[in-house]
Length: 263
Image 1 (tube, rainbow, N blue to C red):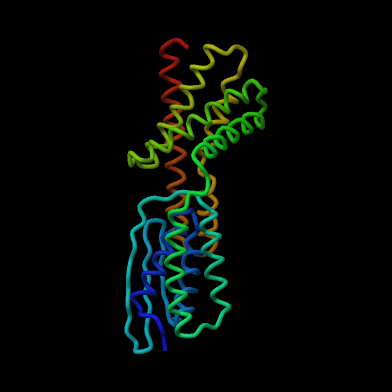
Image 2 (cartoon, rainbow, N blue to C red):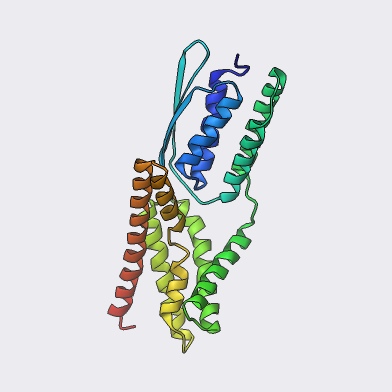
């Protein structure tokens, strides 16, 4: 007999699914983790359906009553650390046989740990800005840039990473957000080219744009499709396509504006 109410289990499963999905996890991982946690609390008959923008889950108790709940997912970002920590928590609980009191304690601990993970910000803002600059700079080197171009790409990458944090607060959609970021990269590169001689802008711009490329979205689209989640795979692929179009539109528009000014 389940020792925890169905409502509590539903809320816990939805919260686990929400955090994993918002952190860049695949839909099949979300479904697997929710099914595991429901089974751990005495509800083995669980059905779930996950898309990149929503979670649907139903559980059946021992009396045959079915309880269903949904969760809307509005924003997503990449945080693989959160996915790993939650997966480890669920997998560790799965191998334990817990008593009624231990299940209640585990539920409280789970909810407390999930809140901590969800609100956790392990890296300070300046470290993220620094990593953005380093990433942009080394991509510039990878595509044949010089160390002078590395320095310029590093500066642009740090500024764009810093600016994206504030642009995200304006609730722009992904298309507009990436278009503005790409335009900012080109504008900064063109401006610095006026003051720094003998640098190749193509390497610098490519290095900056690599920060925006939706690599994880493309990977997840392939993984979801190969695992049979055709709707989720197609949705992620279309999302990646529109992000790419936004990057192209933003950078091309800014290049055209600069060429019209004679630069």
